[in-house]
Image (tube, rainbow, N blue to C red):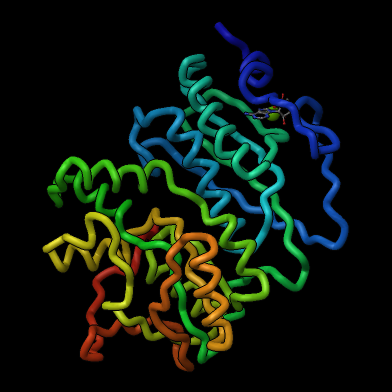
Length: 319
Ligand code: ADP
Ligand code: MG
């Protein structure tokens, strides 16, 4: 049987070039870059709650880091370091090797180093802390939206939720559509590059993890503003473009969650620059509404301007 320390040595001790001291001592030692603020965030994924028991280990290694990188992206921060707290029901080396590969592949894409963590026996849980850097005046905070700002969305929402609807038997997708939606659910691509480009362009940003409306509402509450969203302007990609169940499509696009796109606001003067950025990085950036003065709630309007009734804004673990 492999020991706790063998697990750490074999699977989670790849060399760290930028940390002063990485895995192996009581703490890692880090030297922040001059003039930078540290941006730190944690996200925990629990088996049976955030992913089904039996989820592919490599997929889980990717996703558990991706959801954390998405938070750094939404702050405009450059990822630097990660800590990994892992509770495992058993020490399965095949599982560990695949998990570590999924984790390190995405870490390598973003030059992020695993510098420490904790390993214990328990119900399968992955809790990752990431640390990034952002110039003091460039962080994309939730409380900075202003009435008059455009509201922008990267990529498209709803496909991850549509995969879940299919798995729950509430939607029936053709095989090709299902695998595309499942890929969005299992291996989301954190918008780290976009977040860096949005420094100085966007006024506020959030990543869409719990549902477009739920996460927009966090911005509205923090900024004490309202919003108008034009439903028909929200992009529909893949299976959602051809979905004929209008209620299902609306639920997925507006309230689905697990999208890891960036929702951001910017002054009108930035429109041309944001459109140019979209072309430059090859990622659709779509204007879906506007920040308005008023109570912190989003009004969603159809093409005729009629306000739509929305049953649920998104996911809440304790609702
Ligand atoms: P401590 O007893 O001080 O908590 P541990 O024995 O838990 O230390 O960990 C030993 C070293 O291995 C520490 O540097 C810790 O950060 C690191 N570590 C433990 N688990 C992991 C993991 N899953 N991934 C990366 N580093 C880990
Ligand atoms: Mg420990």
